[in-house]
Length: 430
Ligand code: 4AD
Ligand code: MG
Image (cartoon, rainbow, N blue to C red):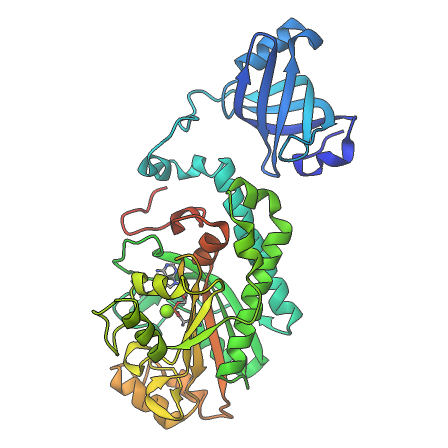
C-alpha cells in the first residue's frame, strides 16, 4: 500500500511504501536508523542487520543525505517517536542519489543558510514554520468566511501610494509611472462599499532601508475593510480574529510547535479581549519606565514597543496616535483633532506591531484637505474621493502582517525564517 507519513497511523502492523528523502542517518554495525521525510511529516526507519539481507543492510548504511527513495516497511506504534510511529524497513529503492548535500548536521552560519534557502526549506525547523504559516492562512480564510466577509483581490500594480511616498518601488507601466502595492487598503475601501465586509490576502512591497528582524521588503498582508463599522467595533473584530488564529494553530500544529520548542502556555493565554491603552498613556508609561528621550509626537521604536508589550500577557492595542504620525486617510478623534481613531496591535514577547488599522475618513472635504496637505495628487486619488461622494458611510479596516504574526506564534526570532523566499535589504537570491 502506497501512503504518506501523515497517514501512516492508519496502517499499524501493515506493510506500506512511502516516497521519501533521507534527512539524516545514524548507524552502527548492527542497526541503521534512517530519518525520513516526505513533506507531510518525518518518521524514523529502522533497518536491523539480523533481520534483512546483508546487501540491503549495506545499502541502508551507504545511503547519502537527501537521496530520494521509495521505502517499504512495516508500521509500528512507538510512544517514544515524536510522530508516534516508526517504520521497520524491508525494502529500499533509490530514485536519485544525492551527492555532497551542502547543509549537514553541523552548525551553519545564517548567510550560508540564506544562500541555500531553496534547500534549507527542507529542514525540520523550516518545515514546521511553513506548516504554521499555512495554518495561519487557512484559519484566516475560515475566520473571515465564517463572519460574512468576501475575499477581494486588490491590484499589485498601482498608481497610488497609501502609506507614504518614501518607500515605493517604482516601475514603468508603458508610458505611465506605476508602483508595486504597499497596501491594498484604498481599493478594499471601494470594495467594502460594494460588498459590505471584505478581506484581502496578498503580497505588498516596501522599499524600506530597514535592516531589522521585523522588516521584509516583500511581505504578505491580510487587509479586512468593513462598511458601517466604527473604530471600537473594528478593535473587537481584530482581537477575535487574532485569538481565532492562535487557537487554530495550537489545535492543528502541536507537533510543529513542539519541534520549535514554543512555550504553549504563552499561546494558550491569547484569548479576546485584549488590553487597550492610548498613545498618551503609552508615553506616560514609557517615562515611568525610564525612557526619558521620548516625547509626545514621537513614533515608537522597537525598544518602546517591547517595553509596553512586556507589561502584558496578551497583544495590546495602542490607540489614538498623533495625527502627524499617521497617513492621510485616518478619521480624526471627534473630541480632539490632534489624534486619530487608529490602533496598532503590539504582539507579546517583543515581536512588535502585527496590525495597523483605523477608522477611515468619510467626509469629502476633510479627505480632500488631507490629500492636499500630504501633497498627493487629487487626480490620482479622484476615484478614492468618489467613495465620499456617493453614499459615504463610517467604515474601518486594518492590515495584519503575516510574517510578523508567523514569527510571534512560532517563536522564531527573525522574519526571514517565516516566508519561503525572503526579500531583504541585501538579498534577492535565491
Ligand atoms: O501599519 P501598516 O503600514 O498599515 C498599512 O499598510 C495599512 N494600509 C493597513 C490597513 O489598514 N489596511 O502595515 C500593516 C502591517 C504592520 O502592522 C506589520 O505587521 C506589517 O504590516 N508590516 C511589515 N511586515 C514586514 N515587513 C515590513 N517591512 C512591514 N511593514 C509593515
Ligand atoms: Mg504601522
